[in-house]
Each structure stands twice: as C-alpha cells, then as structure tokens.
Image 1: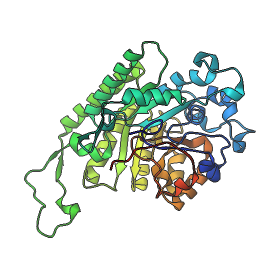
Image 2: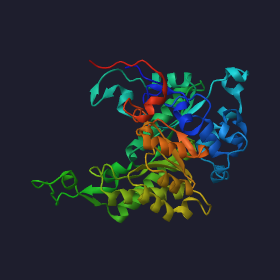
Image 3: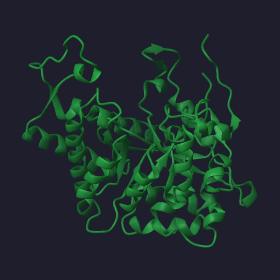
Image 4: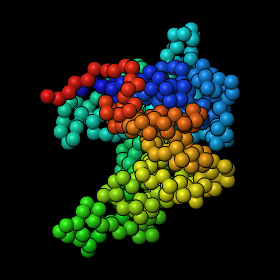
Length: 389
C-alpha cells in the first residue's frame, strides 16, 4: 500500500483548506502538524523566532496566549525549539525562499498494527514503520508525538522510542516522543473488573444493556495503578521521551466499551498523575464536552499549579464552538484532524478557532480526510494509493 507522509492522510491540503476557514497563507501537509503553531503556543522564544510562519491575521502582533506555557513549557516544546531557532543545524539552505517547512505531528498512533503490516488482523506486508518515518522526515516532519492507550501500551511505546533513538545513533531522522495514559474507551480494562455475577443478555435487550458490566477495582488497587502511571511518566519525563499524560478523557459515543462511571474514575486518576508529574494533558473528547469541562474545572487549581491555565490539548475536536470556548477558557489548545472536518458545521467551528490556539494532528493511521467529508473539497494534492481488488 502506498500512502502519504504518515499513513493517516493521503492528501496534502493547500491552506485554502484552512485559509478558507481561518486565513493561513502558506501550504501545509495536513497529515502532519505545522511546527510554527505548537511551538509558538508553547514558548515565548518560538513566538519571536517563527515570524516567517505568521499568518496575515496575526502579522502585527506576537502570540499572546503563550502565557499559559511561559514559565513551564512542555518538555517536547523545549526540546523541539531547536528545529525552529537555527536552520543551519538542519542543513536547510540559508536562502529563505528555498527553506523547507518543518513540522511536528502532535498525535500519531505508531503502535498500531498497520505499521507492522497487519490490517484487520490480516497480514498484508512487512513492517514498514521505518519507511514511513523516513518518508515523513524527507517531507519535513522532524518530531512526532505517539499516543498510548493503556499501561501496557505506555510501556511498549517507551520501548519503541528507546529503540528508534538507538537506531538513529546521531543520524538525522524523525524524533519520536510519547505519552503515558489510558484511553477512555479502555479504562474498564485498567480501572475495573468484569462483573461475572451480572448478566444483562436478556432477550430483546439493546446494545447498551448487553454490554459487559464492570465493577471498579478496590481503592488500594486504584492507588497502585496511579503510582504505576506516575512511575512510567516520571521515568519517561526524566529521559525526555514522555511529554504528556494521555490519551485520557471521556468518550460517550462508545459507551459499549466502557461505561461513564468507569471513564470518570479513570480520568480522575490520570488527572492526579498529571498533577504529580507536572506534565501536560493529551485529552480525548467525544460527545462529552460539558462533563469533561466540569471535571477539568474541578482540577484547574491543581493542574495549573496555582496559575490561570491548564496545559494540554483537546485533540481531534469535533464539537460546537461553545464547547471549544469552554476548553479555551481553561488555557487548553484545540487539535484538529480529518475527523474535525467531516461536516459543514465542523468547518464553521474550525473557522472560529483562534489561530494561536489551533494545533494540527493526524491521529494516524486513522482520522484522515475522506471523500465524503466536507473538508475534502479543499484538498489540492493527492498521493497514489493502491486499493485491494
């Protein structure tokens, strides 16, 4: 299978895709995250150094919302600033007109079996993650943040990153960072146990009642899980490889995988981990914006360490502008990908998001812009793909 820079998207969008919505005058591959935005958002230095990436909308004034990150920018922002601050370090021609834009993908799933050549449990080709990352680097992707969905995946991701670092051995290539956390739809696997005494599979029951029943683990077990996550996150933070807690949050669109009460339990546990480790949040939200906002509001003082803002991203955003504004009021950033551009209403929401709080991501190999999506009308460049017969 041939695909794009990172398998998620088979297209490069001219910024009319976004400029029709929010007026950005330069070309960006939608399948990767523009480095100028997140770096400006995370550090004062980048706001000064990335002036060549400013949009017309913000050409006369510096990014102001960086106050949320000014005193304690996320680790990945501090480490990746170098790719913006000195072009000579990356063999970029000194002629500005020939400089290649450099990017970060703020959300990828490099542990996905597709990168091992397996699709829907069927082997299709040899593992090709190395090829995908090499192609990404050639297109200007210098950093990728890969996401974890369980404790086991958090451990596996740390091992993957360590292995990739060892293979590079000082050579140029994509620098991969990671997260530690539990996805809301998988919280039951970690924070609860199946209730074998309860059977809801009665004739006529719908899907919501035939789903597995779960019992929260004991208080002592919950504490042990939190300590395990803290250990993994702190160890990764020390190495420089782990940059956020997540992917955590709420997902009311898929309650068949995990009921609300267990999701809330898992989210609160991970917020405690974030408070302890001082790492930003990588947040998931599906049809749960109001509840997620209220829980975050409860933790605002602890998460902001007495400041005004919570550090983190609400990724793959697809709700209303009212919900977006609630998250923005907490100091959070909004991440968008193909799932954020499905409908005309989605496009109107993206149009209203402030540019200095907008982050692009892939969530690859998922969340691409499909032909049925409203956003597909703005695609200007496509890559060859091979369909199965």
